[in-house]
Image (cartoon, rainbow, N blue to C red; front, side, top):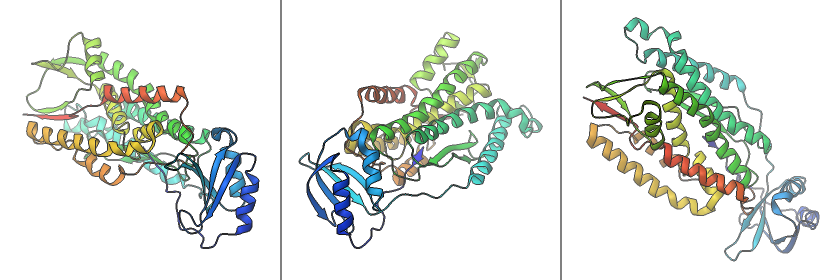
Length: 379
């Protein structure tokens, strides 16, 4: 998951006409200005309306340098009549350096939390449960998946020259059956255009799946099939997970009487699919939200209510099945963070065909790995 700061902060109260003219002259070979409006849309802002003379995707860095020299940051939008607007925000983004010590402390804490979770998993005695070194297969596997996911975002952001923090891992021992709530990175400055937004959004899930899928298949191949325990926790099935169990064990599981007893590696692989699916939900600041916004723009905001309604319905279903509130916490998180999409500075440049097809593939992956009811409590 990534979070992006809003590019709109308190503007300067007075617009310098000299700077307005310098910016207009500086971009004359890139953008033909039809008219200029001061204090639009907010006081201190400058709006230039016209058309690009060159491809906006290739010239935005040069355009930004021209505006930043005068203390402004350009945003590119399209009005209701299809006319191109360059709105100069009276601010230059110079984010401060991050404190990497916090990232390191949280990383170590999450390693310890996942070690403890792995040691509790399938422990036969209380003594074994607290021998945390026994949890290394789960800890190594899940940290590899989560680390790859977040570093996918990180390196994609660095490639596009977006200031970004290192991953903040979130330890959650004992309370969570996976020992963590995943990780987040924070983009410290706005993203350039939809192509960069897409690349940063899609890189995490693809990198995580690159490790999650082999670990899942290896874990399933080394796990045994046995009778379903009358009491315990039963993991849910996504389409891909259901088919993976059939490929490995030659039968659709769970059956009426048996299921796979997941070892630590298989459990981490299943968790990897779950975490990836959560992040691929096409709303707000989630990876899927970045992907879908890059594909369809502001129309992506219309997906918020259908997604929320679906999660509420699934929560009601899980409550009636086994009195659990499966999606309750996630609904609360999306209520606060799912309404707002990350809008790039250049919101006009569209995705190229290769990215568009990859975005569609990412949404297909989401359907294949989404687990409607992740957990069931038996008994």
